[in-house]
Length: 573
Image 1 (cartoon, rainbow, N blue to C red):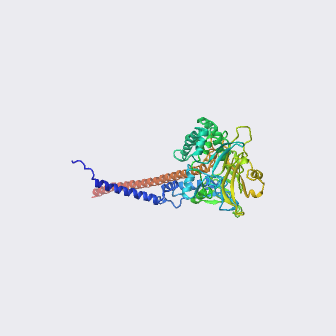
Image 2: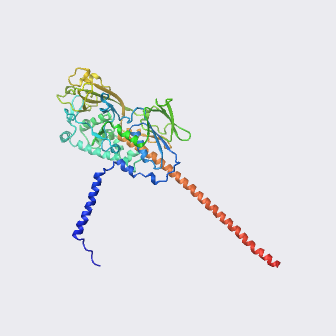
Image 3: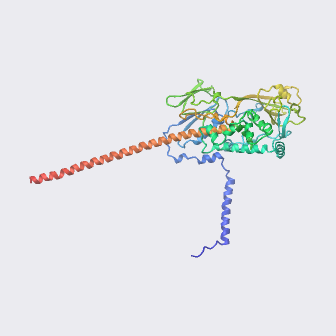
């Protein structure tokens, strides 16, 4: 056999041209057709109903979800995606307020719908898988955490009520250099610890940990119990992070995000506060994410509707009593196969019968006072012990002496806008505080303090039960509240991590657990039907066999009778 000849040079270049054209075609396809979002490819991989022989008489599953915030909207959204293609599901979402989004909501500055501002949950970050994926799927426009203000360069300071422990811009190499110069390796070690901690948390989205019925066990399995069992301060020290960085910077973050100090809040939440890469918000309000989820799920959303009681009926279904001005009698009763509580039960003001097997304990929540106001005045440097230039973002920490702490957790200059009444350019401010802020105090922090009512042109105040107090703990509330798997709870995750994303994760988790339960029911039903069909076939075969044996027996009897008759005839002959 002759050895194979190498390809000619012309053939080689011809093949390269072909490969090049193929690569070019692929590249053009990627340019012309944008890549789908994470959620879109997951949906594309789900089974197609057309591939199944669906039973048109299959009963419809009915699900009640109480709460239209992140947890409730996500439960509806993912339940619609996780269900079997042949399953027909009716989802009803009850919401006692007049809007979707729960603690993620906006108010209109000056009552102008074109000037919304976040009143509750303001930002999410790039590692928030569910929120980022939904944002892409629904085509929502995002913006950075804070827009630039023309005459006020974005800057950040940490104030202890007397002194400024840190001052710098909100980003940039110079601020990074200042932090490293002042705090040494502590910022780098904190960043590494944060990435390790967040990496452990992200395991909860995937098998074998997802879906999970036991949050306490799952926290242990992914390696987060060490972080939840210690205070933020203890967790930092255990990981070699010493010095003032914890008090000056990390505590400033825990105070603005959770109104708690690092000697009280657990280590996991302390690390969550430091995961700020890619911070963003939705133009017009983050609530649009959850509105999009509910619309995509096809759920019926009942706003201004309060659930008064939920009770189990003799057939295993659950009756839901609801109150709403839209009902002719003011009261409505509906029956469901499954109920999801997607809001803290302690604030739900409803009765559940029978009581949960392991009822969620009542835990204290922070009463956070939010004050939004507009003014033509800038913040007064003298009110903050400065000679000039107040930072656009003021965070706070506790003083190192016995001096009184600041009256607020943070003050942010959000943006400038035009007052429609005066056509004057004004600043929009946002304050988080542990107690109400008086109008006189607001006047005292503005330049040219005259107590002129026109100096505060618009004000809006709100008290939130914003998040729970988050002391160290290693056990968390149950996800399943009954023995049959028909009553579920999403808010138990809040004492673990309290964010829009984690509430969405728990909504997705509950949806998967419900869908898996339905899948088991379907499998058991199919196995039972197969058993019946097999028994029926075996019965028919047995009957046929018995019939055959009977026929053969009769035939033998007939054959035996024929010779006897013949013999008699011969003898007679």
